[in-house]
Image (cartoon, rainbow, N blue to C red; front, side, top):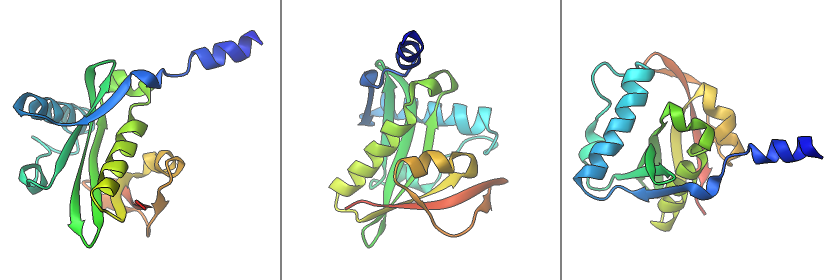
Length: 160
């Protein structure tokens, strides 16, 4: 019985995880700092930064994930049209990955897009993370393809 207790006591305390849209310039800078740390510094996917046209689009929703009040993750989402939304730039700082913050960030993006009238969300997922997304209800679309030198899998989830 102690082994079972020990196994469950080491599970992440997801009650301390929260997600919310970016609110103001300080939040926005924090959001971009986390993305920079993961996509530029850690993974080397981008040489200087990962900003693109969606960052300046008023329809894009930037989200911060907090681990016990500390900004630790991000995701952004934006409409593509005809009820389809795209989720991307999911990033969790290395020191917070054991907190399981990724799942609340993905669920927050899916719920937000659905609440805004979306019918489907799509994303390009690094192949190493496909099982994680499948566990959250996402399905593969087509075959993996190269994106920035890393294999990514197109995935999709119904929002209604």
